[in-house]
Image: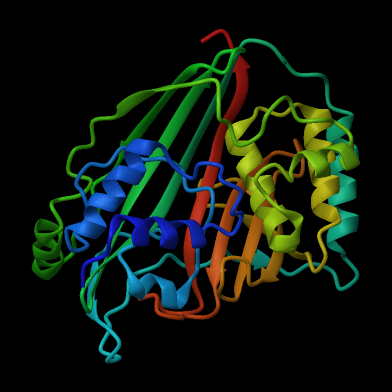
Length: 345
């Protein structure tokens, strides 16, 4: 079935829970994804990446058209027929392992302890270029007729922004690990995504940014600031997404990080999952919200460095399968926040 350009635009708009008109991707990314949908769902090779601002877990919507859905670390491709139940499943990484907390350990209490410690830290540099680096693993899903094809390609991004908002974003892909001849054949059919590991760099313009202006260092003011592009009516899950988006967009000092932790502490339903070691080997305190933000039941976990108050990791554990070719429970996205600082470039 072919879809008109207007039909594709309507679907893409409905898949953004924010629905506020703020861009989820550059115009170039939208054009590439539209081309892939119109051509029958084959992924366009070597796309310049743009960080997805939303994890859309729209189970039925994914099978309707070839919309790209953000998700999952791993390294294999899946091609499966739907809806006859004969799907092969994408490989996903093991969930993080948590040290069980004391029975009386509350998320709010733990976060306040970390926030109090963070706000006493020495002031950090607040001028120069904002330098942010992260690595991420997502699953892209494309649909051609009744055929679902999923591929997983690890990526990293590094941004440098001047005080006026201009700058650059460099992105690199890693080639997936192909364990069998069948997986290699699928990779060939999907135009060898990740084959070219040469990083690409694009210019950043002053606007639009996810968050306009410096982040406040007051909890209530910061809570209002986080509603930019993240409507509170979308529920508590929207606040958790906004917090993860903020650390990808802005460099935060100790006072701002303390305020951010205090905003997180106000999220209804948030629990303290215990101590853990993230996928970069860093120890942190884990806080989890079980929610349906994005459509399907999932646990969204943020891992915080208890010494610095920095956000280290954001992970989503899917608890309902919907139409996705992922076994549940299974990790369907994670991001590692590696560098956040002001520098001279």
